[in-house]
Image 1 (cartoon, one colour):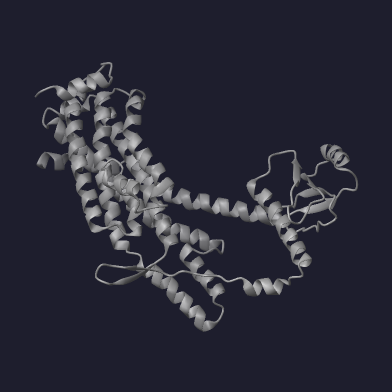
Image 2 (image 1 turned 180 degrees about the vertical axis):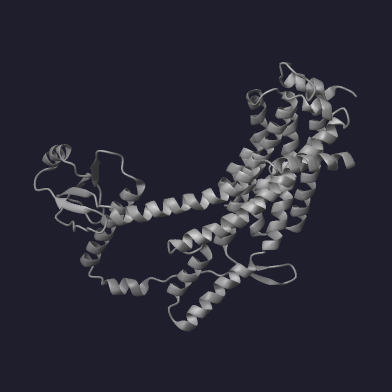
Length: 435
C-alpha cells in the first residue's frame, strides 16, 4: 500500500507541477467567460444593427394585413407567376403567396426563398398568419378579444414530495430536469477526458522505457493503481478549481453586459408575474424556497462518488489498453468497445432517463456499473429510493474491482511488450497467463 501511495504522489505532483496543467486549469476558466463575452457582445451588436428582410407578397385573398415587426412586407401587384419572375431578379429575401383561402380550412400558403430559411423565420411567418386568421375568425363570429382574455386561465401546479415519514418538500420539475442534465453531461465529459489521460500516460511511459525501471521495484498492479488514483486526484482538483473560477468569472461577464445569473432571472420573472408588493414578496419567497430545497450537499456527495467510481472503473480499462499498444493510433480500435456503455448512458439520458427517471430502463441503467455514473446522476435530482442508490453504489464498487482485476492481468504482461501486433486474441492470451 505504501508503494501505491508513493506512485499516487508521483503522478499527482508530476501532473500538477507541469506548465500544461497550470495553463489548462487557469486558462480554460478564462476562455469560457471570454467566449461568453464575445458571443453576448456579437449577439447584442447584431440585434442592434440588424436590418429587417424584405418580403414581397401576393395576396389573392385580400385579407392579409402586413405586420412589420419582423419583416418589411411589400405587396406585388400582379400574378404569382409574374411575382416569381420579378423575385428572381431582385435582392429581396422571400416571396410569400397567400391564396384565396377559407377561414375554416386555411391552406395553400407558400414561401419562395433563394436560401433555406431558419426555423425561427418560418415560425415567425406562420405565427403572424395564424394570429391574423384568428382575428378574422373573431370578427366573423362577432367575438370580442376581451371575452377571450377573460376566458383564458393559467394554472400552475405546485409540486410537493411526501416522504415515508410524512415530511413535505417543495420541488420543481424544471429545476430537477436541469440538474439531472447538467450532472449527466459533466459526468460523461470528465470520465472520458480523464480516462483518456490515463491511457496516454501509460503509452508515454511504455514507449520511453521508464516503466521498465519502475517495475523493477514495484509490481505492475501497484503501478497501475497508483497511476489511476493519482490522475483521479488531479482531476478532482482541476474540476473544483474550474467550478469556482467559471462561476465567479461568468457572474462578472454577465454583470458587465447588464445580464443576470439564472437565479436572478427567476427572481425578475417572479417580480413581473406578481407586480403587487405583497404578492411579489410571496413570489420571492417561493423562489428562495425552491433554491433552498435543492439538496446541494447530497448532490455534490453523489457526484463525487460516481465520478470517482466511474473514473476508476473506466480508468482501469483505459490503462489496460494503454499497456497493450505502442501508440495512440493503435489504441483507437480498442477504445470504441470501452466507450459503448458510456454512449448508451449518454444518449439514454436525453431519450428516456430525464423524461421518465423512474421507469424500468432508467432504473436498470442507473444500477449497471458501466452506465450508472451518467444514468444515476440524471435521476438523482428526482429522488431515488435508498435501496436503488445503495445497490447502484455497491454494483459500481464491484464493477471497479472486476475491471481492475481484468485490467491488471493484461497490464502486467502488456506493459513490458513492445512491437507485438495486438488484437483481442492476444489480449485474451495475456489475461489467461499465470504468474
